[in-house]
Amino acid sequence: MADSSTNQNTRLYHPYQHLNNVPIDKLYNLPTSPEHLFPEDIFRKHRSWGENLQYYTGTGYLSGAIIGGARGTVQGLRDAESGESVKLRVNRVLNSGGQGGRRLGNSLGVLGLIFAGLESGMTYFRDTDDLVNSAVAGLGTGAIYKAAAGPRSAAIAGAVGGIAASVAVAGKQALKRYVPI
Image (cartoon, rainbow, N blue to C red; front, top):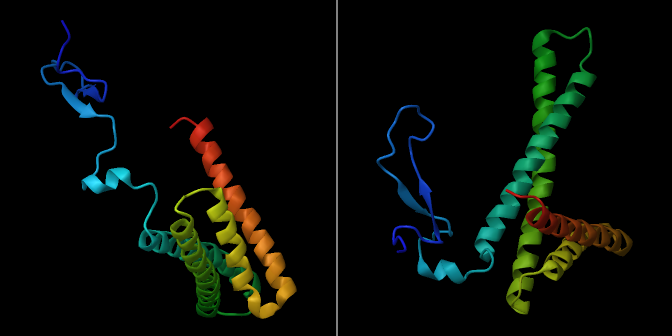
């Protein structure tokens, strides 16, 4: 006779399993499939353009601000002169770190903004979400970002952007496939 409380889409959970001498009187059936707040979310295959925009722009700005701030702080420590007072040294280090963080954060945020727009546009027009969208978005992002520097710089930056986006997506797919979580 099959037990109706066990299902293939659930797993048994005991909340006090890590404690000693607690009787197993309560077992809960927890779902193993993803839960969605709205039923229409079940059929979504990718993030919306607004979610893409927030994700890429925010991630780019935050990572650029952290990396640029750290790099600027190190540069400020190197540039500090031995004859300066402690207040001047601290001021130099803080100013250098803030300036470096702002510059790199803004640059990477703009790159994320352009990439998100291009990738969302490609996904909308092609009606599929694959490596091609990311590669074309990376190519376009590099070309647009460096367009003011001339056609040669734009072509080189576009190629670098396309390759970087392709490698990132391929690496993500490899991690999903070969690294158990």
